[in-house]
Image 1 (cartoon, one colour):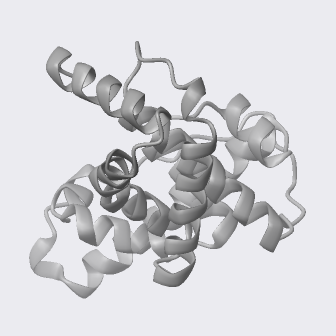
Image 2 (cartoon, rainbow, N blue to C red):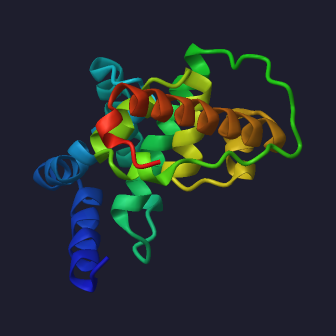
Length: 190
């Protein structure tokens, strides 16, 4: 984050805290599209559900704006709130299936040649096809950078379960990539 951008965000937050409606609208408009994209990753591309999560997230942002620490990135702070809102939504709707707790999940190697040929959109489309639990943990760990401990605390599972589900998600993605490669042999450089 550039210093100028940080100062602009701090000023925007200060004006929002003073109740300036135009500043609140500006903050919302500045970050809404990015937060909607994040929400979509957690909802299997269900736009209505993603909009609800983003909207609920922004309600929490404005309710807690006085807790924002101006030494950190406003965008990152809002992103964490939206991700936590998505996790809360997930918990409310779905009961996590019973997972076998594995203390040491094995690492699955991926074929970088195949995945390197995919666009970001194609890869995200494959991630969206993962079962809900796998997708949730994959998003939290691989995309949003949470640790297994943080995921376990957020979802009410053990770290071993988080590791196991990530491993299964990676294995499932690897199988999808191999299937995709077999359907498009011209991409094959294995």
